Length: 148
Image (cartoon, rainbow, N blue to C red; front, side, top):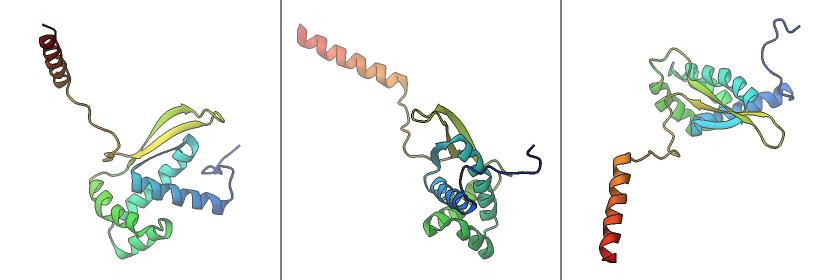
């Protein structure tokens, strides 16, 4: 029975686990979306949300506590400047986990963990359908005129 045993070991020592959580949270705050295994994402969720809650205090002591876990000063400034302002009215639940299915090599369950209301620049916005139809009809008309 696993009564009163919190957290997952992830097959690592405690130092390795802490380093893993620190590195993954730094990447999450920097890129706002990362892909990892489902178990790591579930562990990262609580670790990262505690750091975001701490950053909402915006004091020197809170900044130093966050710097203990996030060693990149640019990411810490992003966390305190933009992310804490984004989540100032939200009482919790700053991350979202999206399941992807099994990984091809070892069948590990994969997931994407992302910040809620993330502004990710990698996803292009789809163009409205009307523009595509209009552009296609103009091409046909121009092509028909050349055949006559």
